Length: 239
Image 1: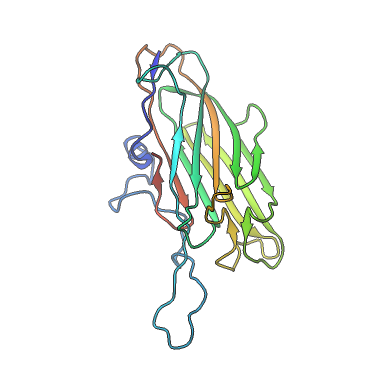
Image 2: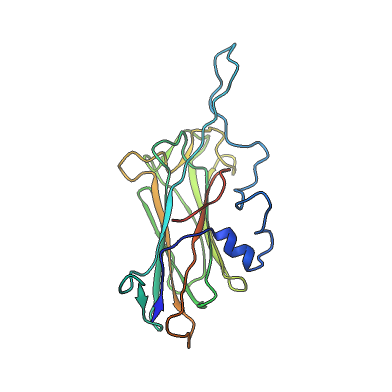
């Protein structure tokens, strides 16, 4: 059997220890997507105001692994392990999300060759990757309440997921696109996953399956966490 403890710690620490280029930083967690302009600003204040509000998405999250048996969560060494990484734009957020990135550095005791992408869900949308794939890309066209705000054309969500088989790094990316400009929406209140209000519109998850390495010793601990980035916010490690 394998011991699968609660998921804790930071993905960036795992990546740094594994020697992944760019993972170690003296400034702390892995930063979000590059944006020299910083967080998306809100609407202009009335004339004479000395400040401009800044609107941001806000993300709690967790990673769910196999339940296993007992407090040590023991699982069979030859069974398939299913994982789900959940995210939510909190009710206290002031904007929907325009770009979501989920990163997972697979544990070296797992057989990366058996990795399979599963479902990708956000708001009321459910996208299923084809069987036996390690990369996936699609353009989705959700409607309200999964999306909010205005665009010049139609709002699309570009969805990608890919495993790097050399490093064990898995990345999921969801990005709002204005089809009229092929760029993110200019409206700072436009995006997907509006702040959660109890309806599920601000929640989602990604999932995958994988098997332990063949011949792994009984009692081996398999642990890791994922990291989630909303827009220009800092990466948050799963609970």
